[in-house]
Length: 279
Image 1 (cartoon, one colour):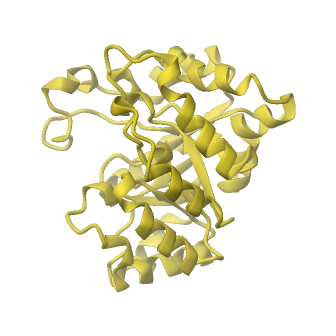
Image 2: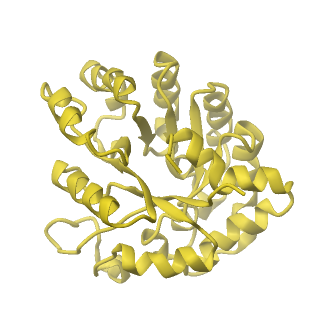
C-alpha cells in the first residue's frame, strides 16, 4: 500500500509582526505550530507524512522549512517561496535546490492587488525556470483568478501546476458558477492537479455541515478525476473551523464511495506523483 500524504499544511513560530494576516477573529492561530504538534494528528489519520507549504513570502522561511524537513522524516516535501520576478531567481533556486525535499514553490497570488499578476512577463519568466529544477508550482488563488490561471497553465504545458484549496469556492453562500465552469476548463489541461483542501475556511466557521461541501467535491472529482486529486488538511489554518480529524474526515467520508485503489491515489499516490516525492 502506498504511503498516505497530507498534501497541504503549514508550520510557523508565531509573532504578530510576521503574521499580520492573523487577526483577532483568528486568535486560535496565535501560537507556534511545529512538527511535534502535527505528528500525533497525522498518526491518528494514518498519514505517513505531509507536504509543508510556505505561509510567508520570505526566503528565510523556505530555508527554515527545509531545515525542519531535514530533521523530521514525516515532512516528505516542502513547497517554499522564491521571488519569481527577481533577476536573482536562478541564484535562489541554485542555493535552495541542494535540499532534495524542496519539491515546489508558491506565491500568494490571491493577495496581489493586480488580478493579472500571473500574466506578467516577469512572473512568467520565473515560472519558465522551474522545470529545469523539477519544481512544481502551487496556485493559491480565488475564483476570480481562474481564467488567468487557465491562460498561465496553457502557456506552460511542460510545467506541473497544483491548484490549492480548489481555488476557494464560496462555500458559505453555496455559489457554484462561474467557479464550476472555470474549474472544468482548467482541468482539461492535464499538467494541473487539484487539492481538496481549505474548504472549511470558506464556509461558515461555526455552523458548517458536511453537505455544504458535496457539490464542490463533485465538481473537482468529475473534472480532474481521481488520478489528479489529492487531499490536504490546511492545518493549522483549518483550526479556525474545526478539528483536524473532522476536516480530514469530511474528505475521507466523501471518498468512501470510490474504490480502494482510487482512495489510495487521492490519499497519497497522486501527491507522490505530482511532487515527485522519493517515498
